[in-house]
Image (cartoon, rainbow, N blue to C red; front, side):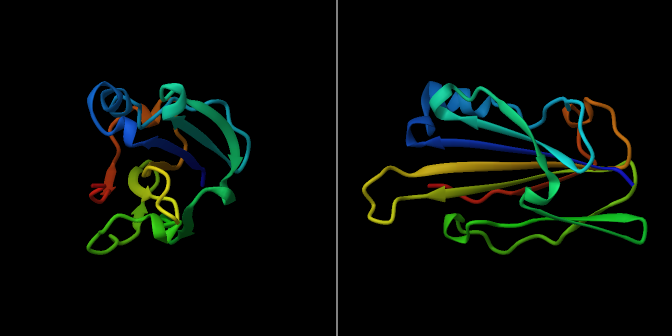
Length: 157
């Protein structure tokens, strides 16, 4: 069965925590239309504060995406990996994996917070959005409402 993966990473610093810069960051899309894809490739998009959150996309091997995908009993088990562990904001505990039936898709969001080891640089942040569909899809599938939405974002302070 077809598996379609889109991984969006939005990166910013304290400069985009408030005001106009935060509005620009918050307006960044969490789903994009899919380009023509090759077999076993993922649509990877990066949005950075330094260039106004303009999307930059590439095709990447699905195995390089930070998510566990496993097919069993006619369903797809989806569970994002959490890396790096030192970047996690406090969370009570991780939700269970999602099992998708053919024709379903999940949007799963995780955020991260980092500082330099010596505390010399400002905090930096990531938001990872995983859009994953099971079965054949059209190019604008991730512009619609997901079958399942998992918001695993913690407080960033």
